[in-house]
Image (cartoon, rainbow, N blue to C red; front, side):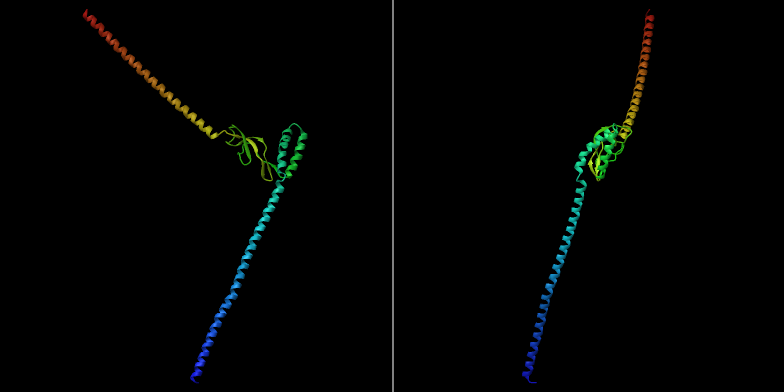
Length: 238
């Protein structure tokens, strides 16, 4: 092979090498361009899916809230009307002791309202006062009951479907057994202390009286001796 042929062969090899390198570079770029849109599309699909899931969850929560509000509206739709009927129930309940006919009317009306969810607040004498269900109108003193307990029910309270419709009005005990016992003990102690003081004063007076008697006795004895000496002196002078 001549030198010219050798040079031509080397030149051709170099061209082929450059061509293969160029093809390789172009291939990498092309693959990147192909992969990038694929990755972007997958990211967008993921974002859209998450957005749709959030919207679906919010819509389900809205449906639940709406259904709950509708149920509450249905339950308490007649609350104002039932509340206006409570004074009628109070009057019928008070009049039942005088007329049996009122008992029948009361039971009929009360039965209808019970079906709507009306119920009495359970109260009894001596139970603890609960500000969530009761209203204190006055205070009374009953030593047989605990402090802040119910003494008398002045007006019945009611619930509608578990919620307070009208607070019960009651009188509350203000007699504190503990304080009363403490006061009694203090009075007893004060009496004992006073008796002790009086005893000490009587003793002091007795001692003072005894001292005065001794002083008087000594004085009388001294005066008697002085008088006797004076008489002796007069006799001697005679």
